[in-house]
Image (cartoon, rainbow, N blue to C red; front, top):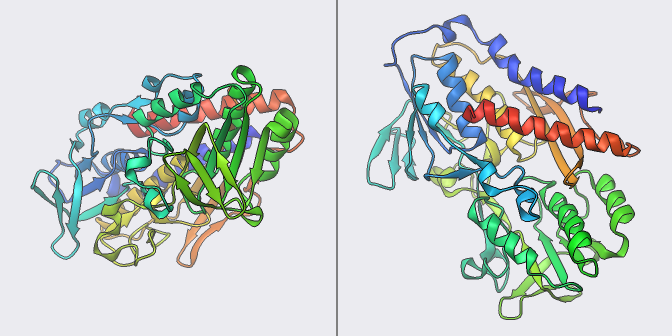
Length: 426
């Protein structure tokens, strides 16, 4: 699909829940109504909070953001190659506070779905009528033999954003000319499916500029990945033998690491690296797995119409922690789910059925700092599941011109600015 159609879908995804919401749920009243507590201050949680406040100003809304400073993960790969400053990714929740949302810089540690209480790390409790969990992911380096939290700096991943991004950027700059850089990709599902391949593309671009004799290898626990034909065509044309992708069938799954030597070990090969970016396996953050919401699977099943937990319907799970197939785990998807979830909660607290709404996603991936590709899709939520809408799913054209790839990068920057404004008001 061409860029203009994706922009139309984004606009539709932003507008549809508001258009479908019953008027009663949008009526103004004093702020003394039911309490909705939202855990997670990223794109999903912040978007849910703002839309609930907008549609149901009678609600008391508390947003648990977990930390004083927050940096977005989208566009962090540009920080790794020195094409963007980490400070440009920092966002604030001040606008949400100004809009009457209670922002608590605490960590949620547990919750009681029966008594509707949320425990915070300072020992306090919050009572709630509805709980929304948008806590993102946790990484599991210990799932890889020889790896663990103590060796993450040796094998940096920067998959959670923030200051770790700067550490990985410094490690890349220290790679010698003629050195070897490796990126290890975990078996799906994981946060941002095209993210490792965008990172590989940008690493390869940087190496070609600054370390032209260096090589890059991608060790992949998957045999197919999103936009793989577009990525691989670009890699071959731009980098040739300097970039090698090894899939699962060819022994790409990482089995073991050696922190002392900095080496990676697969079924068939041992790799002595100058930089090994090991992206660990992932699961929903711990708070989302409390009370058995993940049923031991690591991710939380939801009602696709309301994003209510299949285990405790008064608890909603959105974003990376939720099983929302075929939607990917992306910031775009999390924000889309947040609007649908907010509409469902607003109407439920009015005793009404949830509105029909459009779910949308677009994942942009930079090939270079100035060119990009994308995959897009729109979805309908039904009681049976989330279904792609015919004719709305597709990738950037394989034969796109350089001008079109540059335009796609412009669309990516435009989406990022719009998503930040929608979620955080900045």
